Image (cartoon, rainbow, N blue to C red):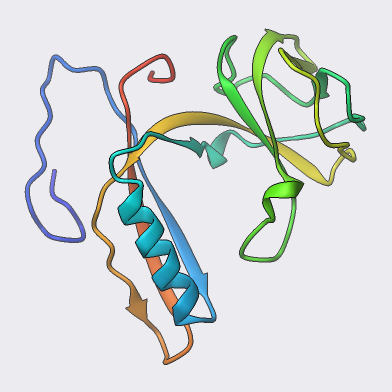
Length: 169
C-alpha cells in the first residue's frame, strides 16, 4: 500500500495481526488552534492514546445518572468487549467538546441492551443526546500536513495507527 500523504510505500508483515489505521480530520476557523493541535500531537508521538471507533457509535437509549454503572445502548454488532474502554460523549455541532462533558469507563459486563461499567459514572446522560464509542489504543503517525483553505480556515488530517494489544482485532 502507499501513503496518500507522502506517496511512500508502507509494508507490514503478513504474519502480523491486522492493525487499523484511521485518520481524524479537523476543520477549524483559526490557525492558532491547529498549530496547538500539531504541537500537542508531536508531544504524544511516544505515547499510546485512546482513539474512539466512530463507526461503532451507539446512542444512549435511557437516561443514566451520576453514580450508576449501567449505560443503556445497543450493544449488538459493535466492538464492545469485557475489559475494553468506552467513551461517552454528547452530540454537538461544535468542533470541540470540553473534557468535563466526557466520561470514560471500562466494561465489566455486556448485555443485549446495556453495558455495565466497572466504576460509577461521573456525569449524568440524557437518552438520545449522548453516544457510546469503544476506544482502541493508538499511536500518532507524525505526518502533520495542514491545508490552509483560506487565511483563517485550516483543514488538518491526523493519522493514527493501532497499537498491538488487548484492543486489536
